[in-house]
Amino acid sequence: MSGRILTASMSVVAVLISAGAVLGKANPFQLICMAMVETTAFCASRWTNVYILEIEEHVSLMHVHIFGTFFGLMVSWWLTQPSLRRETGKEDSDVTSDLFSMLGTLFLWMFWPSFNSVLVDGVVEKRNAIHNTYYAIAVSAVIAFALSALTNKNGKLQMTHIHGATLAGGVALGFSAHIIQSPWIAMVLGFLAGVMAVLGPYFVKMCLNSAVKMYDTCGIHCMFGMPGLLGAIAYVILFVIYNWNNLPARGYPALIEVGSLSITILVAVIAGFITGILLKLNICKAPPVSKYFDDQVYWEFPHLAVGF
Image (cartoon, rainbow, N blue to C red; front, side, top):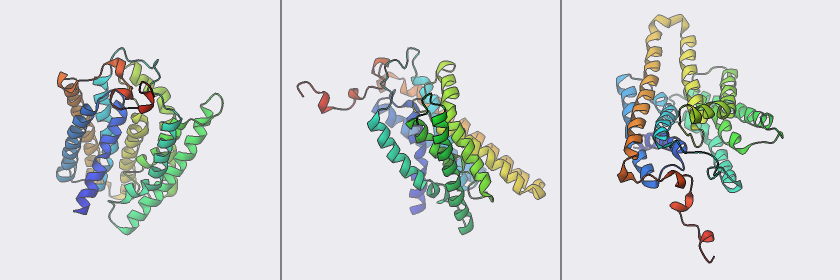
């Protein structure tokens, strides 16, 4: 029973990731509907990977980052209106939200090795997963601070970079943390993930907004999607390298891993596309663009009340 609760708790991470793409553009009812559909779709995808393709349960759950990203981006594509612009500034962070986000980042940074190792079998493999994850997130944290200062014209640190890039290394190590035999490999993956998370918003997010009309509110593609894909590709490459002498016999499992990744992305895109259509129905009462990123529509703020 405890194993099922653990698996369920890790599966709903996909919903948290997807919410970052639609944050401010969906009402509470739409978020609830999205969570129900996404959880079901991810469980179906994971069931296919575990029981049909027979991949490891740990690896199947590490697909949660990729699934949540592509699902959220497809839903966001439907909720993004042509008139959506950034002139209002309502979606920008402030001091309070930045500080609370940094508090959450610290907790995630400390406990991410547990996330990457809790379902790994074997004492040695579990220890490797913990150590390698720490190496990766340490490097991604350092590169986040360095690049954040370098990309600012005044040389100042930008809180949004620190929030995402410090965790990107843990995302990239999710697949292969338990099989990596040299710390430098984990550190290189953490470095690449940190670079993606910091520099990605300048290029990828701009491309999504202007070319594809896909408004990614929190930049989940750079924080979870790209590092997750990096980790999945690295896992297949390392698997092939470590089994090079026995590749004819071990090559099939490598192809299975590629197939499971493809299934995860395909299910996420299709389920997100359908969910986006459902959330646009009149029954969901989608908010108008003028109410995007406006918390006062759904929450009461006593200090803003008349006569306060």
